[in-house]
Image 1 (tube, helix red, strand yellow):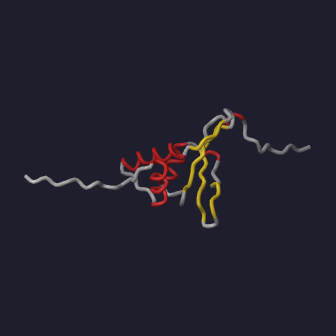
Image 2 (cartoon, one colour):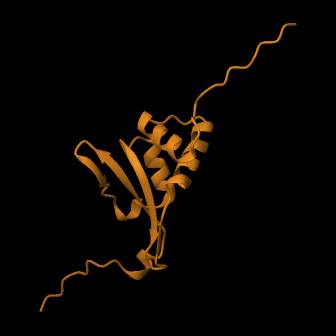
Image 3 (cartoon, helix red, strand yellow):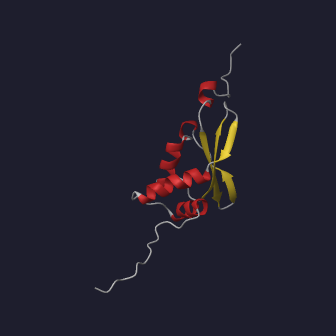
Length: 117
């Protein structure tokens, strides 16, 4: 009898933090399909910076082996805000995501009063 491959990942593949993006599509929000090896924090940040996500709404992190999940949107927004401060460009929807979860506008220059010399 032929044995079918398991659809359940090995335990060592589950013992890591995974990040998933809820994205607003024209038909409504849906969880974005993501390759198993592309769910780490660093790859997520890189994908957001490169425009891989059109309209991110929320990011959820989880670790199946440790048995936890949480909203990671604020952490992601803070990391993206830092990257923007370093000179990275982001799309308008990503900028809105950052501003929504940090509570601060980004890329806004404040006017300074001029001094008379």
